[in-house]
Length: 125
Image 1 (cartoon, rainbow, N blue to C red):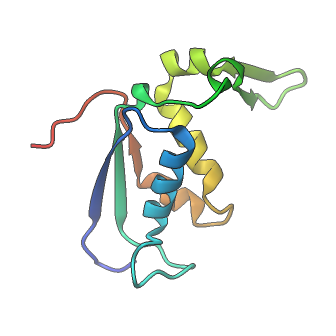
Image 2: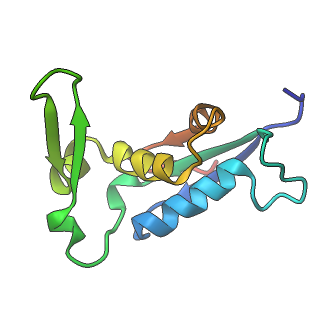
């Protein structure tokens, strides 16, 4: 990897729609707005998202959205509603949305390592 300086981008998630925010984060992680963008390169961009508990969904999704995960065993399908996930793991909501919007290739894990999600506020000092 090049010895370029790491660019840090801070994004406030308060009162933003989940889908629109996650596309913005995914494009920033991939450096799509960089004039030197290449599909097979990882640019040193780190994204810090804060106020994850204040994210918003549109329509009836707040009551209807369900997250699934599987343990790998028979009958191991677990489901969690959006409301429970927002209380217990608000960071996972944004993480799963961004992961779904990144290309499914070898570079995905490197882009996700540069994503940091905080549920609380952050000081800009």
